[in-house]
Length: 195
Image (tube, rainbow, N blue to C red; front, side, top):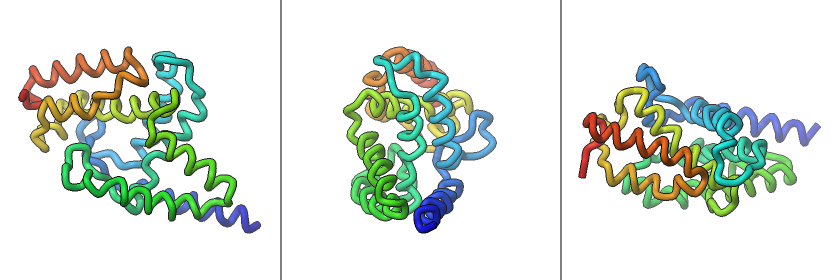
């Protein structure tokens, strides 16, 4: 019963992801998405778009990674991609959060899930590269669909978007080509400021 209690405790803790609001709007532009919606969207993308990974991926492992990659934001908060000051302390905040949140689980699951989180962060394995690609592609898709709403609100520049996506191709050349085209179109429309 103790094992189950710890698992339920973790599950209930992760319910807080529904309250962590991101800066990216839903495709229809009606409101900003939350972390739970973002993670679900990435899991969906992992199995729908797996054929575009540069190398074959373990889809279930990739799905676990994307479902767990933002749990640290329960404590650390969502750091906006282009927030220089917030990004300077992001790693330390997220490591402390990972220590606390994954420790809620039974030891074997805590080790497995923390390991998946660390693997995502290191971006060295095939699955981690593909998971990170999805994490970078999804906001571009939503920004494009919402006519650049978040990009325009934050005055996002071309160099910022390209720098954020400098490793996107490592998980999928095909998805990178697709979103690079969307980025260029949005620069042309004025949704992203040219440099």
